[in-house]
Image (cartoon, rainbow, N blue to C red; front, side, top):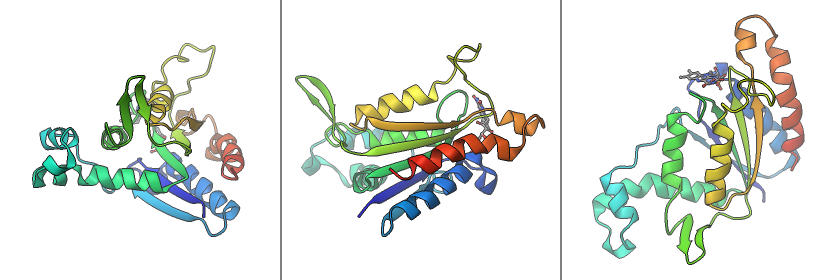
Length: 208
Ligand SMILES: Cc1cc2nc3c(=O)[nH]c(=O)nc-3n(C[C@H](O)[C@H](O)[C@H](O)COP(=O)(O)O)c2cc1C
């Protein structure tokens, strides 16, 4: 049975473009995968904790050496990793903040990237352990980062996510960038026209 894990990041609820496009994706995915399961993790509603000293000591101790405080600090990490492992397809819906991922998404990443669990260091260097998964990332941004324009190199979000997901073994990553949302705010483009190119892409991607 196909399984989708949906991770939402924007704190803007129904006003969020990335969430709304995520709804479109989820509905299309459900239609294309009858009987498939959808798990949801809302990082805006239930915000991740940050890596702290107990987390670090626990993550670098053998399981039989971990104290109760270590285990408590790693509980959320264990949950997030179990959710990712259980999914064939992971949908991340996120705003761009300050040219990269919002802090809550970075905090989620810090829990999921764990030496000896999701990435192993070997003689040949780091080897990601989460193979065979597909990720779709829906990104909403006010600006546009189009090749050949002065802002083309300012999108640090896509390359960062591509790299860190690859680091834990997930190389099949597709981005849908809903760029230029500021145009809606300034009355230069309708909301429907802003969303349409992303909706078209999503309808295709959700079938896979
Ligand atoms: C704190 C903050 C930082 C932002 N930084 C950027 C940015 O660096 N580049 C950009 O294009 N848009 C930026 N934006 C605009 C958001 O990406 C845009 O409003 C997007 O639609 C938010 O996603 P959402 O609609 O899913 O909430 C920022 C917005 C906020 C609140």
